[in-house]
Length: 54
Image 1 (spheres, rainbow, N blue to C red):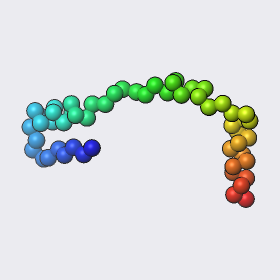
Image 2 (cartoon, rainbow, N blue to C red; image 1 turned 30 degrees about the vertical axis):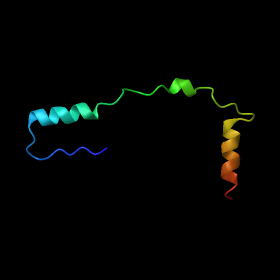
Image 3 (cartoon, rainbow, N blue to C red; image 1 turned 60 degrees about the vertical axis):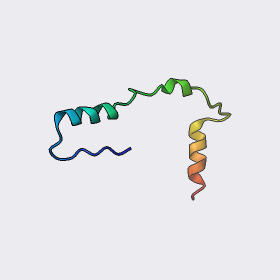
Image 4 (cartoon, rainbow, N blue to C red; image 1 turned 45 degrees about the vertical axis):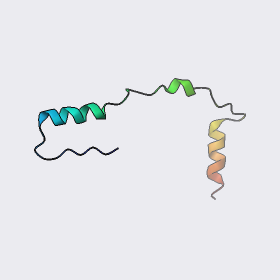
């Protein structure tokens, strides 16, 4: 989304744009906690992926 604020805009126009910009505060990241079950350690997976390039 693109909002254009032109030079010389009135305070009323600025307030209207501010209302459009307002987003939800934060994201619930805890709902993703424990959603992936790994058989091996995550660090070992990362090391093995990095070694593929050598």
